[in-house]
Image 1 (cartoon, helix red, strand yellow):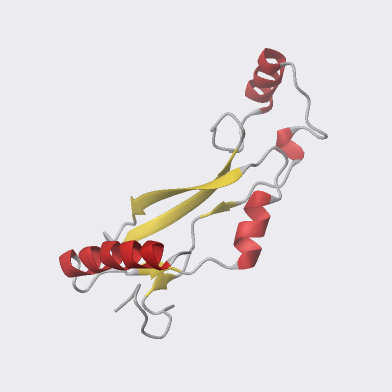
Image 2 (cartoon, rainbow, N blue to C red; image 1 turned 90 degrees about the horizontal axis):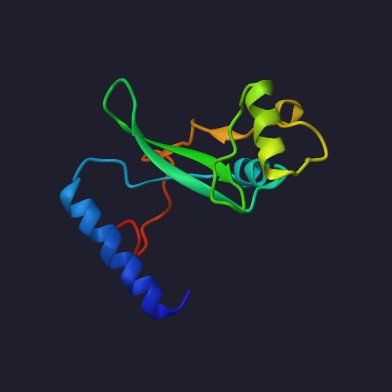
Length: 121
């Protein structure tokens, strides 16, 4: 990260905090969570979705995506066979037998926060 990148990131997070004075500042992602998602067959990256829980609190939802930018989600065996047939590709094992990592319980900041730095203060 260059100093310009840090300055831009600091400005963006400051803008957000100024508009959300008592809101969530960020989320804490463990290496285990990210590695679990990235270790899925065909996974080339992690996508983040924003959501609101039943209490109206912002939540982060993480899911792996493939080289075609499609989310890697559990599907029914019939749908999976159609997908594989259409793409003419077979994974090492059927997707329904593969572990799926969808992260929905990502700890927020606060309380999972760093000491003060340009991104959070």
